[in-house]
Image (tube, rainbow, N blue to C red; front, side):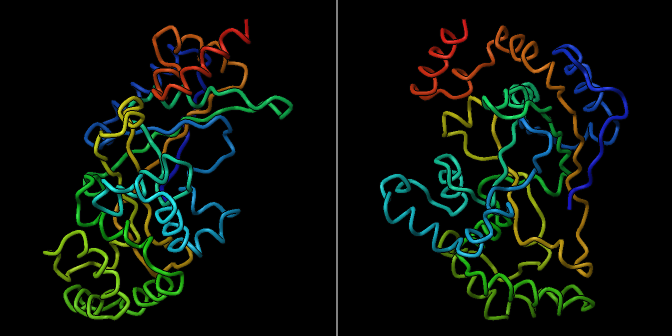
Length: 301
């Protein structure tokens, strides 16, 4: 689980106040040397959870392998240029299929814009939330990382196979590291995972560390997607959930700091952001999004 904290001071009510709060946060001695990224949501009660791990999508997680294959089988042309499983997951996320990716932005103001989204008409108005993620250097990866390939290809494993990886990892606790790695990679279920990884990287050596499949990584994607580019987007990639076990010890984890966005402050902050050019049209460069943004402008006059 990620470590969480919330600033003790009252939440800001203006754009200037949030900019000051973000600057104060990023200047902390500890976080100054860590990578910072942000996520904004309109409802502060929502958890920062990759879509496929949401409780209401339990059946999708259990059938992750088949769900992915179904989408690729009916839309093969959309995935023709993707060379890795991570790239496929990014595209699936883009088109609305929940995956083991959590969308984040390197731009705090982009996250703040999403946090100021009004609640749907007829529903209860609520506070928003911006979460700042502090990423230790060892958890920062790029799209072509070996660790990223290993975790992304968990999506090719059945629910039973992922459960076996969990059980295998627990059974190896207490062994010397070199012996643990050897026994882990010689197990049949890990050999199965290695087959998928080697389909992307034929050179990949069987030296996978068990803990690597449980640690969330920040991933710099290829900036080939217009929306990712417009939103300064990136992802946190999640592997097997270790929360059910107290035996699996993880290294330094991602730290979360929460910045509540008061419901009454949402509109003035969003208006201020739009005056700076941060709006639906610039964050969603597709023509249908731009058209909807223009329509809403006239509807709300």
